[in-house]
Length: 330
Length: 224
Image 1 (cartoon, each protein chain N blue to C red):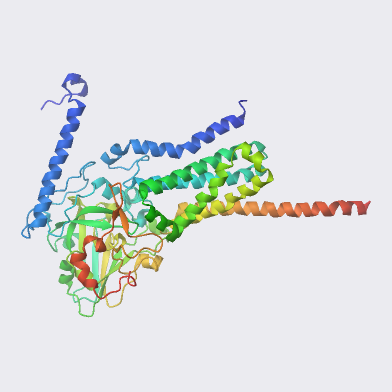
Image 2: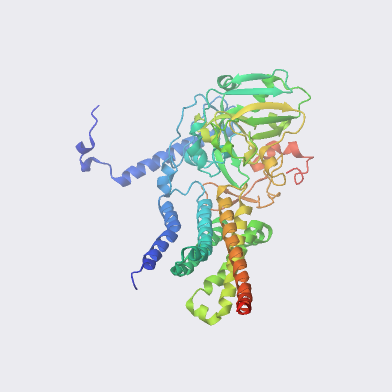
């Protein structure tokens, strides 16, 4: 193949800029339409699991970077909305272990070592175990779950996560009947996570769910996004995603899962108990003490949009809370 | 205009004060480039440009406000009386950024949803504090001209004392906004506390000095 040096190419041979831009726009639209078609098909057919997910088009912007994940299957739980760009998802993060600015995690998480990694499952289970990362990833087939994520700060994104329902892992360790809650612990290592050197939160980051919330099919243990392995700033190598709760409930870089009888302490509840409750279900009718939760900014959109009850997952999760006073149990 | 060092210093002041607005403009013009590259370089407005613009204009307003409060202490410490010439432009730039900050909130964040905005001002204490800070700065900006200094005479100094509650309200606005107290708001709060402390100490020393001036002449006469 003849590779011309830049000087070898005559100006008359170059593609006119307008033509090049049209080509790129057409390519984007094609990718968007095929993956939108693929997503709609997946959402529409219950038989779709088994069909391999196409990496969602990024619309505009940089391509996903990282080790690709193969054989990821589509899920009927995926939302039909277009995903935010890989750039936005990986460069606008709250991960205080790497700094408190939104661009800090992307800049500072290079010190995190996602391999080797172990996940210890303990507490009220019949078969407590410590698994290495590869064993965790083999528990169930990887699925693409395109979920809305709503931050307590009133912004949101649509993210094509890759993982499997947490219930698959919990079934393997045989949860005892006395267990009522699940506690998730994030890595504690100030050498890898420099933000842990200052006590802005009680480290290690801890989160918790009621057992039925943890066993719900929407709750996933996540190891990738956008067709690639989870980037460090998004909580590598394993994170939780609980899409009907505020984003801080979805713990990142998890190395411990413990089944308990009492409600676990959680990092943000420790920090401000009157502002961040244990449940933290997305609820436009219950404001944060200092700002409203009735509207949110979807990243990429100019106008704010109304926030949906349970982040739009009311049909799937509402039944878990019919007898709960959501204003008291915020 | 004489090419004194104050002339050059004023040019420097204008350049430095306009820098935050300039970098936001550059960020706005480079939005497509920023979206197409993975790395978030300095000028990029991030995935949430409204938030970024709000932060930059707010911190610029607060920083410039603290600079105006630092003029008098700096004058006393260095003996450079000419520094007083910098206080008005600094104050007006602080107000300029406070207005940009407020407009960003009204137009870009809330899109002129006036009932939502009214709810915010009344119910969200950090927005109440911010709005009060801006309201307190408004009369100061309007009466900043030499014409008004002449017209108001002694009352001008009294009116411009409002800069103190304005600065306090602005710092409280920032502290009440963040989820946890991080370096940035903590630093501004500390600097304001030090500047206010300096004011209180120098005022206390002035009153003691005036009191002593009344006492000493009689003592000196008695000694003769």
